[in-house]
Length: 162
Ligand SMILES: CC(C)(COP(=O)(O)OP(=O)(O)OC[C@H]1O[C@@H](n2cnc3c(N)ncnc32)[C@H](O)[C@@H]1OP(=O)(O)O)[C@@H](O)C(=O)NCCC(=O)NCCS
Image (tube, rainbow, N blue to C red; front, side, top):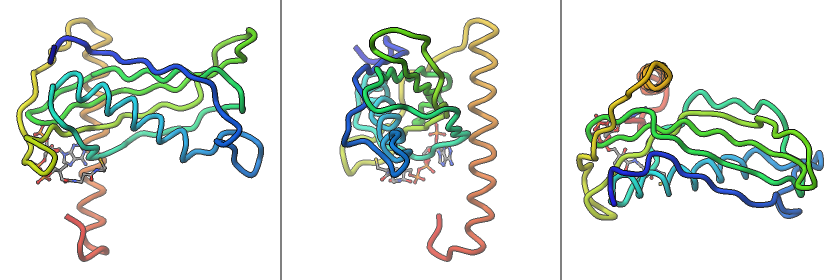
């Protein structure tokens, strides 16, 4: 049911086909996982079709190794009118044991649409309840402000930019 599940987790093994030239998982694949987890969380929260509008604060902290057990957790940290902001963490560990390592984190923002080609539509609001929630919501807002600020700069050099 829309507006009920704030967190979504994907868990799978990093595959040999995900490899980069250095023998680890390539960054594009990690970004794909982040987008997939965010998408599933966004459509689940909104009950609508959603598109990615922005990714911010992305940091590749540590590599993911081929055959690692990967966990991608997307947590809703802020809602606007049509937008949902998710903090996403990608963690990995040897499936035979060992410590879980934080590999990548970011904020990814989705917009709910009224149909696949539709206009942005309102989503169920989410209200932060404790101090940690408030910190995460503020962090997402700061990332969005930075991202929109950069868009203003890009507009001056890329003629077709919104
Ligand atoms: C996402 C899209 C529908 C937004 O259309 P738009 O006309 O810009 O709509 P709006 O200006 O009303 O913005 C919609 C929301 O996006 C948010 N938004 C826009 N730019 C943003 C940014 N840089 N960071 C965070 N949120 C942003 C707005 O704040 C607004 O949120 P709100 O409704 O909660 O206030 C349109 O830009 C689009 O189709 N983009 C392509 C999406 C895509 O193809 N994604 C990749 C594949 S899924």
